[in-house]
Image (cartoon, rainbow, N blue to C red):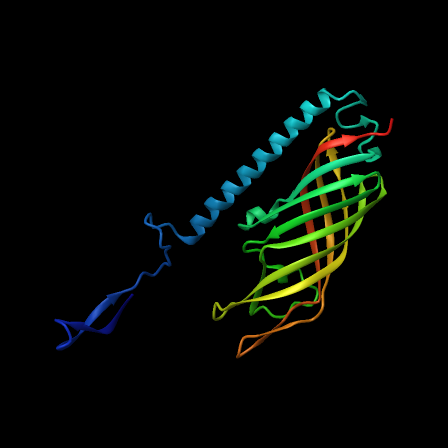
Length: 249
């Protein structure tokens, strides 16, 4: 498409109409001319491959740990059962955060049916408002900035864990029409329910669901106001590994 624009020629003494060319397709600022979609697909593919590689590594490590284990049973059904552990130290990650350019890490300590863990999360481009019960407006997006949290859980049946938490979130609120971003702090609490599916003695996949609750807050954007949702229902899936464990004698 061509449009005419008034541009200076020969300094400031003369002005002429000169055609300016605009590209019909939005391109990125990268030297190779890749579109944003191409770059996004490349990054997603990279993160997925990394995630699959991590899962394979943990699975192989779990097989190795089981081979050295003195217990009985089979690889998928060891004896004693994993939920009968007396003490354990676990690390885990909410892996979908890596797919949106963020991250999540957690470390937990288990004593019999009780578990406490601390975590840090950064959601990247993940829009938390998409999972809100009372979404404020489609004119805004809410992202997780780096935020810490602490979780307290109890196994109500085998590896089914019911837990509560306290997270000190810093949300980045983006007004989509202007691109203006403002931060808002929120102390979130709630309940979660998740099940640890163990593959061997150490590696586990833990899908679950969270109900987040928070007080109402308003962010002023001048021509519009953002009201933070007071409740979110969010599905989660974590990959974890037991670094150390001790069973009752």
